[in-house]
Picture 1 (tube, rainbow, N blue to C red):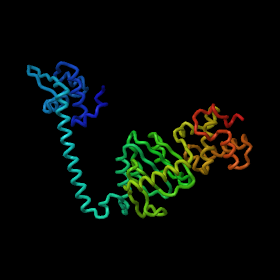
Picture 2: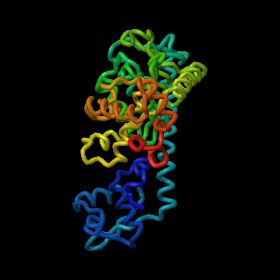
Picture 3: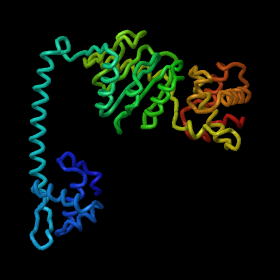
Picture 4: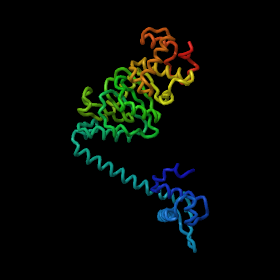
Length: 344
């Protein structure tokens, strides 16, 4: 196994020392230059790593004209190192508990750890960053204008492996911040839906904390972080209700669909028409659709006009109804399973 796949930092070892230790485990002994060659580093760095392993009793130096090093038996040597690390972590946990007690003593109303009130301009984006970076498995997001989170806070992505589901209000999905944030989330495996109306701006972190504005119509006036399990559960239910009613939208193919129509295969044109009709059906304006798909407004209008002619629809409402009946709005990548918009 490559040392880069092993979290050596958990043992107190840096990645280079971990690689050197792995090499020593695979040979009877090695001198500094052999270790340097195997690790791909200068001899001085290899010797520094060997000294660290010796100090930690993970390797021993063998005397001779040219010093050599041999690995200690891994089970007892690494076991002793891990035991020391566990003891250190236990001390840190005890310190954290003591600091929590001190924090409670001076925080007054926040001592109950039920809700935090954030009022200053700097508090909200800073706390948002902390909660987002601390999330371990899921982030749920209801987004609507006006957007007040700073650009630096928006630049923070979720940790790899954390699932993100977002619902954006269609009227607010035209600005650069919302589109950039949505693209970042979906690019990391997140899921996106759109709806015509969202009741409140909301972010839920690991179903353990929720961030929402104090005044819904004035998000810049301050926010609260809710920790109460009962209240967070109710907010999760609110999110799931909005999520179920919202329409799925894919941004992963926007660059694939951004080329000019000339020379684009029929399947590509059909796929783009499908995406445009799906967005139109949830009430998105032509300008918004064009921004999302990275195409011109004229291209969007041409696809809508062509689809309307094929469907025999006089209005956009009729077009959405007929497109849904034909299966054009289904969330599928396999266009061959549905009637092609340009083939009827």
